[in-house]
Length: 198
Image: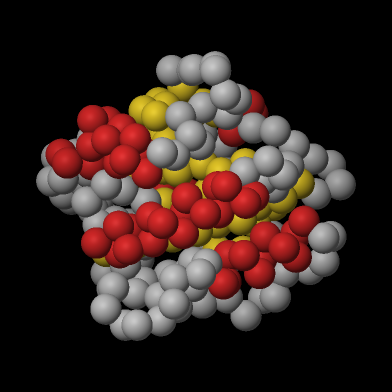
């Protein structure tokens, strides 16, 4: 996983749905445009059953934390192998879930690789340091719930990290990797850690 304390990688990606501010739309979004507040970056997609399982909790997180925290969804799956994770599929997913946060398409997979992403869903919480640089405080699972395992879907791990950051407390460094569908890398362009996740 990406080491804690790393800075948010630079990016500029197409926005397929949502926006930073209600009533304003943008074709692209870059890291330099993000507000100086905590950022919850979510590697998700439209087709993955693990993502579908957590969609209700993502909506609850957006409703509860969407003002003091910037939520940002990113889909990095290869459209060569999984065209259902293209712009139209992501827009339909966002509309069905009534998500208003930006949903970005990482078609070249550069952001996912910079984050050392392994699966969907995967969560990264950054917050500004004293110099205003977004620093990684948490990376890993939403909670212990998985499709069919009967564990309550409540976002426990991410919520605990969010609450710590918002209260100015250190985030517990005992962080569990996420479990889900492997990111669908472009054929022949898999990163070294491909296959390390379920």
